[in-house]
Length: 319
Image 1 (cartoon, rainbow, N blue to C red):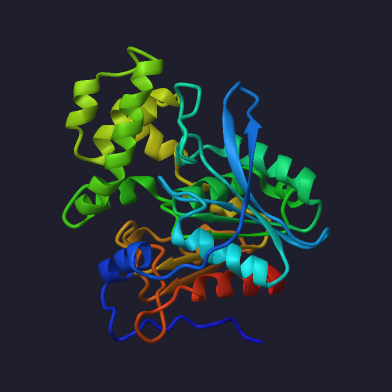
Image 2 (image 1 turned 60 degrees about the horizontal axis):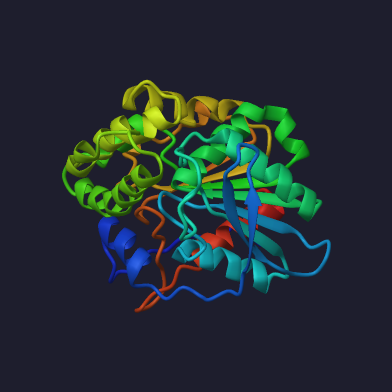
């Protein structure tokens, strides 16, 4: 069986239509998940949602995108596909993304590979082998960076991986979201990012200037005020440079599928990695259309089954 091909529908044209429609209008399947709270080594917690299944069945672990959760349409579609294939699965919520604010001043960020490694090691202890990892958008960048940093050692943790619409060049992605139509996506993200950041000041007074947080209009401004200093970076430029996964793609040893649409409004086509910039373990799949984690296909009203089908084909066959 060959890998499924993505055929965008005639009635949903353009990257923004794909991106927005997939996020708010498409019908995503419902999956029954079981939640556990894991205390982190630094005294915080993360909430992990589990898809139960037969003992010994393959396991899919998902890292979601910026301000995402197990309720994100792509997460529901992936977990439904895992369920229908008899797999088990889990979705780890980055700190503060499960509906309850985390305990510490820190939150999460695009290069949080220490968190990725800790979670995968713990899931690995529950799942046994085979364990497969998927990261979407921000979670995809963090997963890809960890895979590169870990190199051959990652093989002891995961069998294979898939990275979807990851902003592997955070500088290019941040700039794209700081102008034109990208500012509409930024406004959407900032609505919850600001609310969480301001709520943290009640528990952790003096972390940053509340008035400047309220006034921030771009991710560059917000990251400079909040994300970078909270997580040990000098400023936005330092954060976006050091947290980008692109320089690490050449060191990935685990079979990894890297999926992106060439018209992804979050990452310019010119910033997509080339074959020369990735290892032989990485398969690049860049569809001409699809937007940012859109990939809607089929007759109206459309569905989002292509992405999970493509991911599972790779995880099972490495092609």
